[in-house]
Image 1 (tube, rainbow, N blue to C red):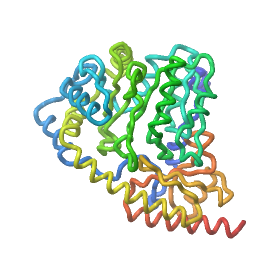
Image 2 (image 1 turned 60 degrees about the vertical axis):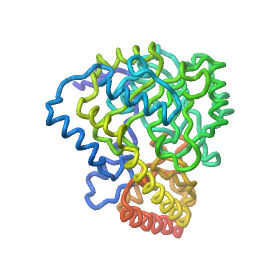
Image 3 (image 1 turned 180 degrees about the horizontal axis):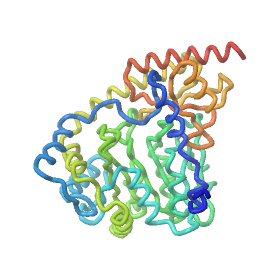
Image 4 (image 1 turned 30 degrees about the vertical axis):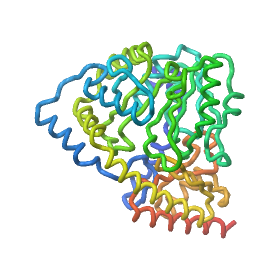
Length: 391
């Protein structure tokens, strides 16, 4: 007899991640070039790795405070105030998490009562809507478009509001589109949040990888700190994906609520990762700047190559993802990805993995090496030309 009957209905109804399913296929192909995974190709800078090694040599192998090491929380407080212009008290308003994904999960579980509604803009990171559902909430997607360079349209957001909306998830720069949002639009969104008494959960994991213009956190606007949960982490800008270390900042009341969920589910983040994160914040600025410069050069190259191949691609203002249109091929996102993988052994992610408005697009990470980007762009152009020639 199948054990499926034991699975909770709200879990049974969740789709599997479109990224992971697709890359289960890719993992079986040893000669495929992957532009699919959102992971820097840089190894974590040596001075950060050395901090973890030194901590291990010193026998730092214990649990830490549920909220994280106080030394790390102090460094986070200083960093966030300097970079994002928002002040958080290290004792009461900062919680160290196991990556920003856990921070998003505990934020949602800390605030959602069954049936509460949560707005989010999409295409977006694959976990947002499922995380709302796992917290017994209802997720309401607000589409963004290529015409707006995938920046959220405040009018469309306001129109999507309905009674029962408790929170809004923002992520700028955005995975998978690289879209950002202007200060003026954020001001309108902040005003809307105040008028409707909405809590904002702001995932700012790609903030340092903003290439043009300023990065502005909605938490920095007057009256917004007390209705924002600010999320960030070390995976992207500091190339520390495997350390699984992030943090959440908010009011003492919300931090306490998140801490309860965190302590019963996770206890604390690994101490070696926390020691490495302290070093990253104290001395990592130069390493981040060097990697950012590399990403920007790769971005300019891959976007130019996509446009030359007839795959219209806006130049993303942040992240390390290009999101070109594949409309000229006449294929769906999934068909394009399956066929280019089979024909040219290049792996990209169908835009639909990030929401229904991702149809007609693919996500290509330019965190891969130049060598891979050159080979992959040549192969994708060859494939697209071939498809169009047969049409």
